[in-house]
Image (cartoon, rainbow, N blue to C red; front, side):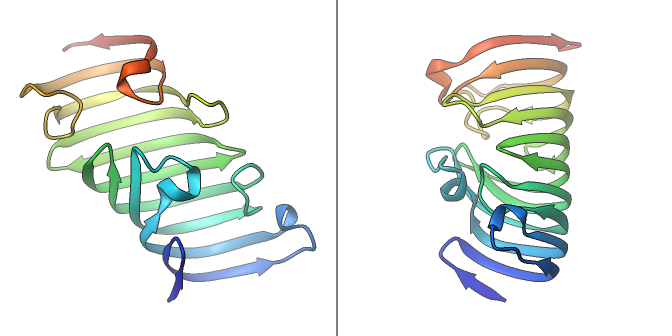
Amino acid sequence: KLKTGLGYVEADVKMNLQDSMAFSRYDGKIKLQKFKLGKLLGMESVLGTLDAEGQLKGNGFAKKSANIDFDGKVSEIYFNQYLYHKIALKGNFQKQLFKGAVAVKDSHLLATMEGEINLRQSKPLYQLDGRIERADLATLHFTKEAIRLKTAFDVDLSLNSWDDLTGRGFFQDV
């Protein structure tokens, strides 16, 4: 177990280091505890710590050059002032673009979705399709009113905060 400035990292990973870290390769298992993902991605206002483990394969270490395939479980992640639990995640993060699938079995959110999250612009873009079986929007800090939601969705949104949200959304069977 290694303690870093971003959190705890435990790994069983084969590494092939090159002179340029962008070309260095890795493949194996990783476990993160209290990892400051928001700090790493420059999104500390909405994204906090992460506890996760899974299979990792990729190359590069900088957020602008990394190409990482991940298949694993997030036991908890702090997002939008709420600590989510029980998330399965499979996808690829490449040059600040995540493409993949997510399944959430949190006590206040039961959902599945797939799509991409683009962090390349100053205003991140979210293009997601999925199904929410249950969401308690007030507990998740999306509304002040007690609203429970169940729906299928297709969204194409861009935002840094809820005040500057732009885009479109299609919701079915609400």
